[in-house]
Image (cartoon, rainbow, N blue to C red):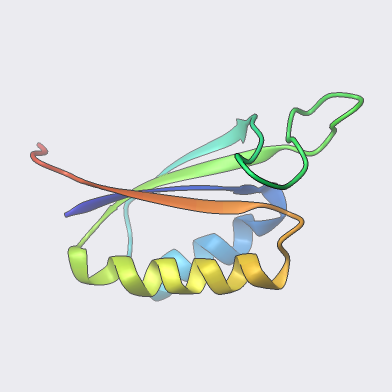
Length: 97
């Protein structure tokens, strides 16, 4: 099992939920409002007067074989609209209950 953290501009929400459904990644935790900025490019997402856009995040634990299709599709989405901001990070799940 792998954990995938997806951080994204709120404009991506419906597309990411549809992708998770399509790949049968049922379980996830949704964080509606998160703030941040990219490490290399992109506008900050602070929800402030100067930087009004906001990010969201989804944390999902998925089977190993679903990671590559998920990341590949997320990467394609990001390339289509790079200015919005979308990142995904994966790490191993050692145990769960």
